[in-house]
Length: 161
Image 1 (cartoon, rainbow, N blue to C red):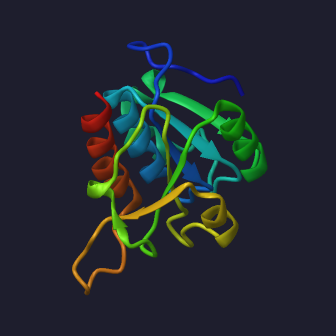
Image 2: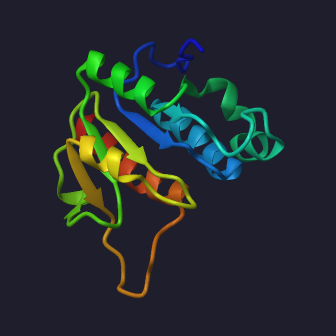
């Protein structure tokens, strides 16, 4: 599928990457966020839903038409594209020690978020240039992926703008 870009900028630099997302409402929310912040969303298939799902459209509202999105058939297709583009892979995970707020983002960074049900597999962790976390209270297991994406995207945009 060809990449769709937002109307504001033909070449968005920061990218939000969703590894095999399984909740359409979260993906719709992230696409809406990306449209508002002029980011691109990369979706690594297979997703746990059809991209024309009603829940996706409901969460993304009319922003879906303005969102820049690129689909990748699988992990290897994404990884080949990323390496050819020379982009850093930043994986957000509860297993990291370094906070997303203490990191120096660069234009072109790919900020990867794992599946809601399973996170990110080891082979993805192994290829990451950096792994970051959102520090939480010890009683918290994880945040919703759309909330996590909004927090990290906000900080990354603040730094590179």
